[in-house]
Image (cartoon, rainbow over all chains, first blue to last red):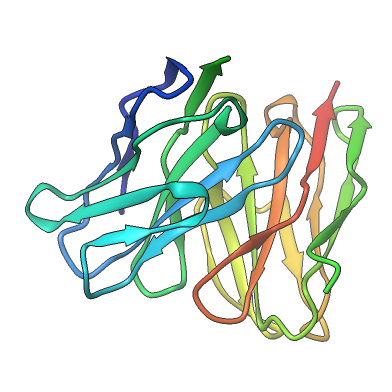
Length: 112
Length: 111
């Protein structure tokens, strides 16, 4: 079975700091990769996704992620975070658009 | 498009009771997923439907759990003889292609 690891469980940053959240998955075949975000009091929503092509994908709100196949990684980045980015971020992997596997999440707290 | 809705939003029950949750997907979404999420964890896959067919079930879905999607629209998840370990947030998501849209979840507390 697939497993997804998010090593940073809780990250605290000041506004304007750069962000990088790690995500590693175990499956070595063709995968589809996602980052979801859950803002306080809201439900999960898609931030960005990667299926194929350019390994650097851009999502909403200035987020981007880079797929590195050799490292089984799909790290999320943002050059300059804002207080409104305070949320929990989940990495997810899917093999055939069937079963999705989620990481345990990273809580980001941005100090104003 | 009103999004994925789930009912109820909260449920408190006593151990041993049966509970049923409902999920209404975005209309015309042919895939529907159920997940369970506990504190400090990401969503864990339970089962998914393509139209009315249940195509995969996780081993997390014991015999006490059953899900249906009778007409390929809304879905129900029933838990029989609830146990305290069933306390969790139950999430529903729907998709037409590759992107899942999540509902607000049903938070279950088993006393």
